[in-house]
Length: 231
Image (tube, rainbow, N blue to C red):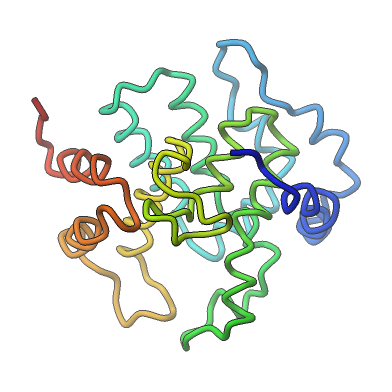
């Protein structure tokens, strides 16, 4: 599925707003030069991510350690799936930058302990589109951008931003959705009295198989977490 008009709008406006808040608008040509090579060589992350370092810092403020943990879990699952080194690289990159768009969402909304209003929820639900627009400035790898864009789509089609369902959702996005949700459940959040234990979070994943998550990925992830070997 293509990125659609929303992403084009965000690249021209909302993504610039995020970059402006981080003081990066003047360095946009440098961002363009940091495009991920199309060769099979695995580029260094530091150089690639340097142009959006300020946005990464904002992301880290909202959810300390979240992106790195998601990247590690995603790689473990991707390895068990038998994905090649380039796909694992692209998945790791998508994991590290999937929430950059939250720099456009007011901190008061992200840290709100009470239920969000409809308007606030709409703001939060724009962050995958904003993130994808920003990520499109540092890499021309479509699978990375689409993994970020679709990481809140649900297997049954009730997610956002496009309501994609099943295998319409790119594989890397389906993996990212699963591991992102798991880590979010096991971390402190302002709207929840305590984080879930790993066992509780895994039970939630099992409950969401077929609705939020791809059932086969849930089974594989639970096996990975248990250290099991699937035959």
